[in-house]
Image 1 (tube, protein in one colour):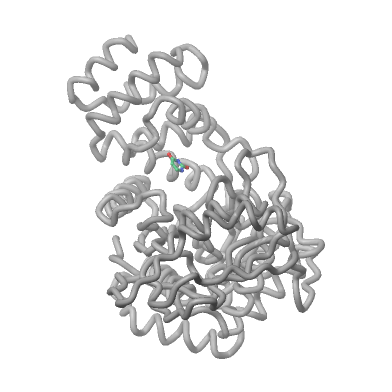
Image 2 (cartoon, rainbow, N blue to C red; image 1 turned 135 degrees about the vertical axis):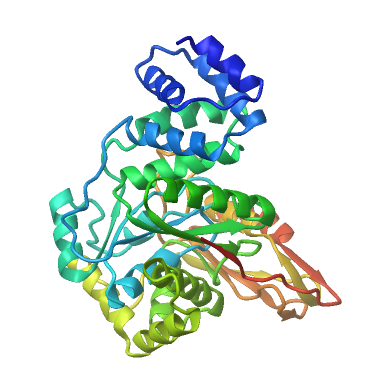
Length: 428
Ligand code: URA
């Protein structure tokens, strides 16, 4: 088999056979296929796409390129959630304890934030003593005992994806649905996921800005999951504006706690409930969403998710204070009156990186105490001089650096415009 011939085959729009895809990934990981040939192949895939069979085979080949985590020691119905990433996305912090209090097992491995979106592990590490580095046995034992654990990613999972993603990043081939879907799914499956619920974001702050592209990504990931014998469902949720009002690390943990106590923002609660409903429907296709919602609401009213969160924190060595510390508050005010018709999630995300809450490169440390609290969101009425956001910054100089981004983030107009749906379709 010659790599050259396979590049030509894909370039001309033909489907690759499973053994050809396996040859490519194996050869690339072992260094037998050079970067320039793989770059040409990625570009051919970018333009010609991939069929369902090819996408499933590519995912399997990426999974097989490294270690896989065996979670068979966890008893019960395991549910793994994945989000394509968003600004103010603290869904896992609420959903994982909720799933555990509903009787599911929720072993959660999360990443760190990069660019304008934050990471769950960074947020949890703001809780004094909280360990995100549990060993494999500790992780499995805790999930069996408590119902859930939240840790950082471990192991050499899908190294083929890591290498290919690095290449795509510098060759203009990231933005290809089959490559993105197989990349995400290979890491999930290598991480031991069985039942999978996906939160695919669309809108300004999302990886996939247009709803149609987000839907296609969700459909492709669901197809891959099914092709690999996983139970899987996806929801589409809006990331036009940040989720909730808090963006940062400690500030998002505090908002998630409020949500767990049923005091939280409505949009966050709705996304969490939609994902929990999807988890129920994975097990029982015919279960009605209403019935699932009733069960979720009852459990939540009984205070169980909040109790479960505290149990998880304690099990992982954390000592949760009443308030997590925040940096100095600066007020960002409106310079006109009207209705907030836009609140650009991407700009708010970039602003949080300027403050130090996120990282521009993998090596940077995050500052847990800085962040933004959005006092006014889409649809709200605002008067000139009113506070649009409380900005928690280390000093005035940093606040001044963030201000130009904030100035562009809110669109305030005389007439109120329609706001699109928070939750799009469910894909199964
Ligand atoms: N995230 C991933 O993990 N892979 C991609 O290809 C794109 C986003």
